[in-house]
Image (cartoon, rainbow, N blue to C red):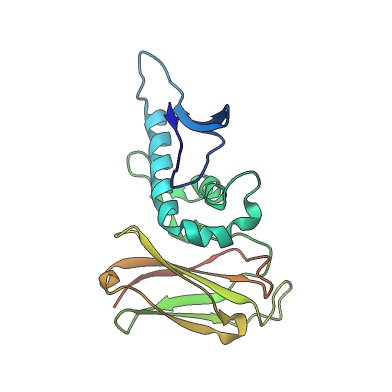
Length: 213
């Protein structure tokens, strides 16, 4: 049993495969249920553990962004925990021992306002990434004043750059500066919107995997 003081996903409650999160006398802890004495390391058990690890590694560097992106789904859990729960179910591909995040199907924001349309990301100038999208403010639950939530995730370095609220839906473009150390890395790009009052958000949309110039 492991006592959870601080974890990359916040507090886990419930069961994911053989991994169980619970609370006893106000202390959060994780444990792994045994499979069988004769075969304690079955493929099913090892697969569950790798899913947990892969998802945790994805969530950890984007926790600050998730405080906005998953805030409305954080019912009796942290936003990072809510994002973990969604992505471990919907964004893992492959078979053990080759499980990975399916970046196009991962969500880093989840909400009810209209998502981005025809979004793209490109890097032709050193240290910068250009996001573009279509102004779809005429859609239901969309406004020209909706603010952008942009995320660039570098799995090579397990780091992320998030830029929030600088552009609006009708701007149709925004340029992000990333660390020089990102140059040459393949990064994963996402865009979402929050309404003008910063209450609700959209589902994130995948803007592509690009190599930073």
